[in-house]
Image 1 (cartoon, rainbow over the protein chains, first blue to last red):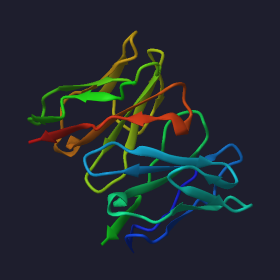
Image 2 (image 1 turned 180 degrees about the vertical axis):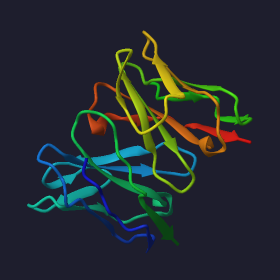
Image 3 (image 1 turned 90 degrees about the horizontal axis):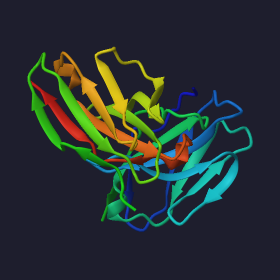
Image 4 (image 1 turned 90 degrees about the vertical axis):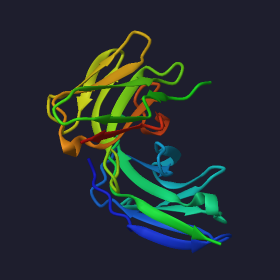
Length: 109
Length: 113
């Protein structure tokens, strides 16, 4: 399974756009890229998933370049409630999720 | 639709004891996975059950075992508890095994003293 690398922490202010980049140099052809969000004392929550190019939903956008060796989660106009840990996962559709340490995003007023 | 519920929410056990954690999967979900999350770390995969059969296991010793029942609820059993077993234990359910479809519970906080 491909290993992922992402920043340990990021700071932002309310109303800003936040971009969190994840490196996954060894991504395999069958692998998808999935992002989860986790608040303290809660389980992770699915945000978005993509295979290539760009995916957008009501919460976020996911940008994946042609070589798929990295991906960027984009959160538009963050609010205080977006303060959480964000995990980038890479894997096929066969089961277990491999979490790294995640990026702790802190949104300030 | 109901989500994933776990019980108990908190638990304190003594080293050497045994513990059973329970998980009710989201309605219609036939796959259940268990994860261990130590403080400040990402969740670590323990094992997964699909239609009552274990079909994947992470790097955990045999004293971590599980069951999935016909209604797709699940148990995680840990024998001979060690201090390092103190963690948040998360259960996740899905319909089949796609990474996008996992719904996590809020976890059981286990403290071993």
